[in-house]
Length: 597
Image (cartoon, rainbow, N blue to C red; front, side, top):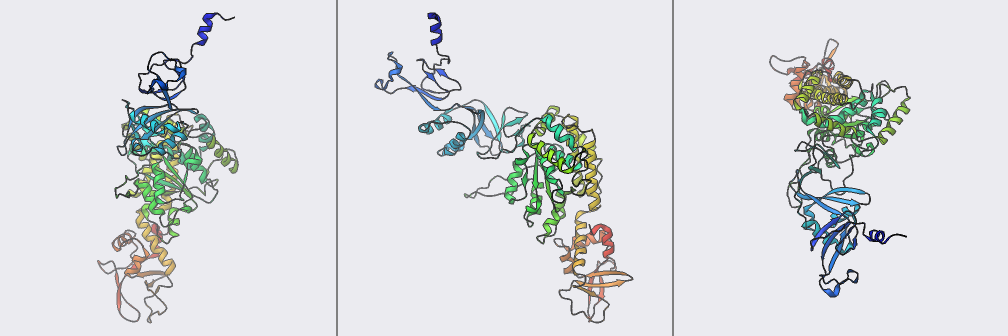
């Protein structure tokens, strides 16, 4: 039989006792007892007094004191800090939520207190917070009454923050005073699953010997480096037939930061939607699958926008300017057609600038289509194993890379390393130099991850792969100015399409009445046919360029075969009488100069 002393001990409440200075708010994350010994479950409380003795609860007992009341408002929600958004200066409150599924953080914008707060309460319910239905207004009063001394910075954009921290949803690397502030229904892009070590063994190790796959990982890791080494955004476009392995490369690149099935995006969206997707992945990577889904009329404009990192300004109904979305990242695109080929479907010629901002990479005619090394597996098995692996293990490498980057904190050394790698990429003009910058920063990211012990690759292998792919691109496009090549290609294409229908022999004594919408004439010199363009046709052939720019390209390629003294043209007598000054073009020279690329 238990002793009286033991009985006394057992009757004592297990919950600690609290003595709030009534009236006041209080938050308890565990069971407590009030001054009267009454147990209070976890939650937000309003501790006060009853208005009249007649309303006294019999369970309180009549001690002669003023009757007390403890109103349960909600499950535990603590206002732990004031917040200021670095993007627009708006304020909020950082909340700590204790729910059945665990402890969470959420930032509530102060502007919600200007209305009913219904949307904010709905979001809290969605995260597991319980609010007494008859105390919804009281709950908002509680939040508004809190005056925490702590001040945090917030941002609605992932990536580098002005404080020097790297912000991700649910995690900030390099600071405990900065938080990511998401909208209520934002998709969770940056998630983690499995283990980094397993990803290294099952994914990264099998990427060795496969330049397209190592490029995908390098693209993902290069995002945080772009602003640090002064390289502009842009992208690479994996070109290959359907089911060649392009999508696997994008899944692997996506797995650096999150769940590949969620993190990867598609070209099938509006330009405004693309801007939102890019901003939500700032300082990381934007994978875009299947360029054939993009609007051919807008695809080049979208490529420019992605590289330039600036969205289009819009206005509210009150005619106030909304803040433009901005970002800096690399895009990992894919498709069966190149960007220029897809744009041509709409009848628009490809702009050299757009092609340079989304550089084509061969991912279809390598040793095993997109792959060079299958590590002893069949192609289908190789693809399947990596697909399963990135689904089970993802979201670790990117944050781990940033952690190492901040630990070292050597900006001068980083710039020196980039300069050393960049020097190994040769170029003969500023345009190729911009592409070389992109491949160099991708190579730098890969080599840094190897040095950090994050990638199980041989030192120098990431650089070798990037130089190989850059060299393949350079050999395809040739040397010289990209706009020059595009102008020459346009004129050659014009000759191929209209050489027999809009041109006729200039030495024919009788005019050719079958030629409509004449573009000029042709002249036979030995076995070589020269094409004599009139001015409107030359501008039509090099669509999108002015006459001065066209002549500059023709002179640079030395394809103006005949001219009068200092003029760019030669005067000809025309069949049927009259004369005209025409631009004399040798298509054979143009072919040799790269116009046929």
